[in-house]
Length: 439
Image 1 (tube, rainbow, N blue to C red):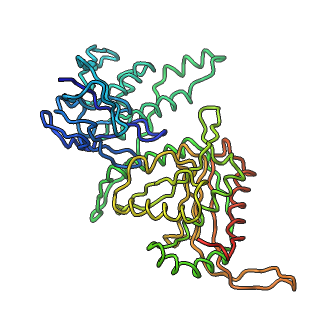
Image 2 (tube, rainbow, N blue to C red):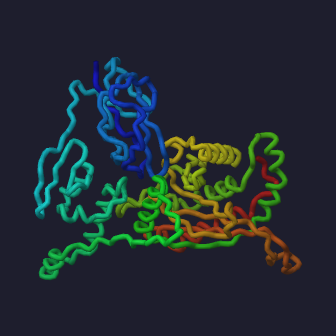
Image 3 (cartoon, rainbow, N blue to C red):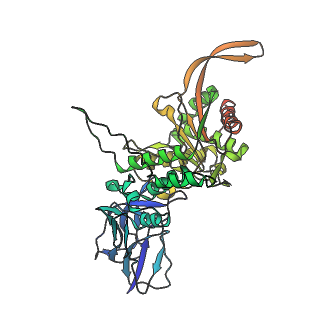
């Protein structure tokens, strides 16, 4: 009988942890190969973690609602398998002849408070903290009093990794330079003020609706993005009459042949991909003071879930696909999103995002960047408008199909010239659409 660790799988370059929604198996249960053991969730997608082999669930290392770092052991599974067997399903399985669970057993006394630690959590005056949060607090010299004053955004208001890192960042940002030692000493002696959320009192007749877990995570991700990137938005109005007329001409034939609808989204993505090839510095991420220029062009498309929340499935290597290929993938991912069938790999590794606010009748929007990307485009509703058209016989006024493109970008590394030129190039590709294109 061999014992193995079932670990938290990696679910994308920007995802460092996931929340356990619920365990599907209890300790002592027999698990078949590829059978789901637990459900997990990130700010992007819910997923199941299957077992790569048959065995018995010997021990759970975390509980429902716990936030677990990628790569951390989730459970111990006993199994009669060949030691040479390769792990499957991208889940790391580490054979351990003798499993030893790491326990934090020290008792820390600071500021007249006591941290009593246990196997997976620590209690501070009846508040619970994960080992990762405690480790960060210890490394950064965070006292018990400071830890207790941090507002948690996790399950049952627990302090998450992001909460404590944001606290540390804010604390460092108010530090006084070393060249003023006297003032610095004084500043260090003052307590750090924690910004508490504004308390709203419900009036008679008001309905109080608890945010679901995904909405909480989306809110946290959006706030983090705004705090990380200085957003700038450029706007362009595009004449898409050629596209509207072309789509009206081919959509019925396409539906009969492919059994799918031809929407405007794949056309917009096709134009964006061409513009990224012209301006590759839009397809980047920022790591400290280093710019990572992405080789692949992976376009994320913001999609509404049945719950009303948004998710961003990704079209991988969109620059290698034809308009037909992009259309097929857009329809496939949208269907999976509507039916809650998206897999973790469906929402990973995006390098640029598009959101179609025109779907809701909006003419334009100012989207928030999907970190760790540096730009996002919103496409508005297509409206008929009178517009001035230049002809060889002079200017004329005609009814045209017009739409706005909104391009939000990270001003740390994307200047107005690049951000504005990029959205203008996308508009140019849309306006000059070939009415004789085949799909």
